[in-house]
Image (tube, rainbow, N blue to C red; front, top):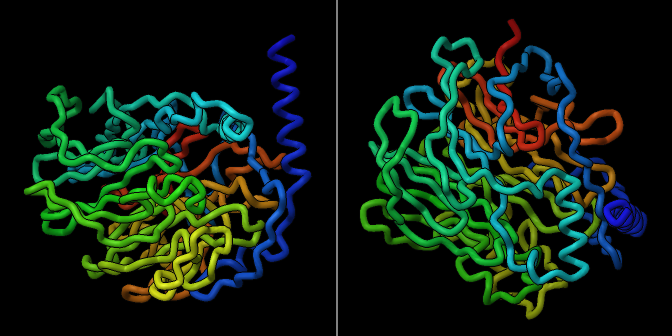
Length: 438
């Protein structure tokens, strides 16, 4: 009976929170592209909470691929797969991971409780498996026949990068290095810490890695410790940023700042221009603020927390920093409000039909702060040379069922050795593979 009362209270709390929110006045598409519509903020006393309950895929079900494409399960039965990395020999690494324990979880309080209820409903409150699993498709039929635990006992691992015979892993609190030999299925050697990363509260805990073409540098993405600095800017030191790490010395410097939660990173076709997918801020209404992807300038400032999409001031932030707002760079391409755009992969190497051969794939994990919901799909943004050149196209949909429940939620995306698109689904616990329609 006690459990039932808690469950009813939780459901009532979510109902009340949702009822006190607001609804979008614009379609998601209005908040996409190089010049998104940015209406005035629509704040409410209690923000919109519209999470999709995580239910998983019923037997035999799968996402819906766009015309000309087909989707199959590359590997199932995983434990919250979030991120993907394809090794040169074609083996696929999957970070089975979730957030580390947070101080506010132990501190309690109604906000922490309500947040925990919403996260559990969305399937994001599971204990982290803290491992990297290796998947192998030896016969190249689009299905991994074998899997093995490559690394275990990690601390909320996420980004991975191989440089030479060293595998780098970004834990929630540090970049680690492990010896690796081609074809290896398990690494028993202890890791070596390359550098510490900002940790602690970990409002955004995922830390991603991307190696430079020459292997001399690693780029490390670190999200903010808050929505808009409401916990004080002292705890944001080194966060909401992309770091550049010198592999040989371990020295690092801030490469770009003001990026609320940069997650996916990829190189443009020139191999020199760094792109990232960024989660923007919440609680300004269902139509604000669009997530985005952008090329990243060395030394660039992108607004957070003082402004969004360039120099649109967020009046909630105190104290204001007009001198920083004046420097804020306008992102290249908006990806829709609250879509939780996380995964980012350049299409190079993909063997897909014509519309999908030159551009960026984006994994949109899906909204909690928008009514109606947004995201919950994989999209493709076409490029001309190094710049977006048209509207986004849906690649993989159907993650929400007819009742608005989450059968899956896409996160990391990557191109496999055979030219298919891999998609990590952390609610369905599947890695999906998208290929050309036979």
